[in-house]
Amino acid sequence: MLKEKFDLTGKIALVTGSTRGIGKAIGDALEEYGAKVVRHNTKVCELSDPSAIDAFFDKLEAEGSLPDILVANASIQAKIPWGEFPLDEAQKEMQVNFFATLRMFQRCYPKMKAQGWGRLIVVGSVNERRPHPDMCVYAATKSAQENLVRGIARQVAREGITVNNLCPGVFATDRNKEALGNPVYAEKVMNAIPMHDYARPEDAAGAALLLASDAGRYITGATIMIDGGLSLPG
Ligand SMILES: NC(=O)c1ccc[n+]([C@@H]2O[C@H](COP(=O)([O-])OP(=O)(O)OC[C@H]3O[C@@H](n4cnc5c(N)ncnc54)[C@H](OP(=O)(O)O)[C@@H]3O)[C@@H](O)[C@H]2O)c1
Image (cartoon, rainbow, N blue to C red; front, side, top):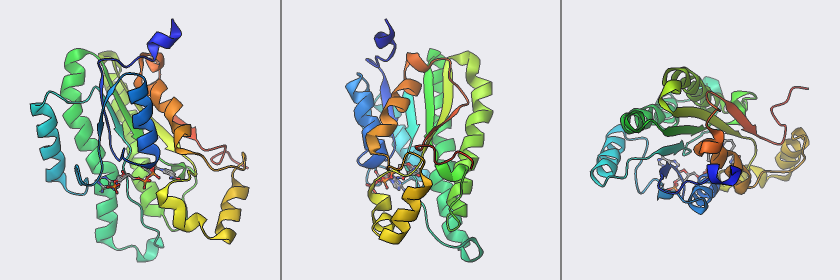
């Protein structure tokens, strides 16, 4: 039965940034389909601090809660023109959006390899295809993540582990509240979206469930856009 392939009973899923926005919707969906979801936010583990990531994973390991499914969803972004972008801010974005993902992949991999099953999912951005002029650094961190996904996917493909990149377009979440509160900017953004609608957090849930479950077992190294067509050329 196809619906059984979506069943996540017995799986542990860690979704970073899962107390609100897209991460919450993904966490809720994985939970609805039977996974035990480890909720995460800045209070649980600050991803800008490499030692906090290892301490968090040491704790998960000690509790027997290392994830079978990792969704690296949390990120930070600053809107600053590239010529003025402070290097320390760029390094922080790279740490949270890329190095933290790499480290979490490394910490998840031994268990996934040993059991011959694992799901590594990153949340990218439409900025990989259409960088916002003031978010070149953020876009670059997300593109680095996408490249990492493809590089690792090929190497672990025979171990029952898939590695994929989910790319949101414009979602109505907290991080966009201020920008989309400006009617002139909001109209410009809306007109660029072929579907002429913002995404809702739950719009990311179905694709995440597919990638996290056996229903998606043959999808690896992929980038799936959830953007209402925003990344399409023309
Ligand atoms: N919203 C969009 O339109 C859009 C578009 C393209 C891509 N994305 C990507 O989609 C993902 C989710 O976006 P969202 O809009 O749902 O985000 P959001 O509403 O801003 O929520 C971010 C979540 O990540 C956590 N987080 C942020 N910085 C963190 C850090 N340094 N360490 C640990 N946790 C941290 C937050 O924890 P606290 O609650 O503790 O702050 C929160 O749970 C991000 O990767 C984003 O880049 C979003």
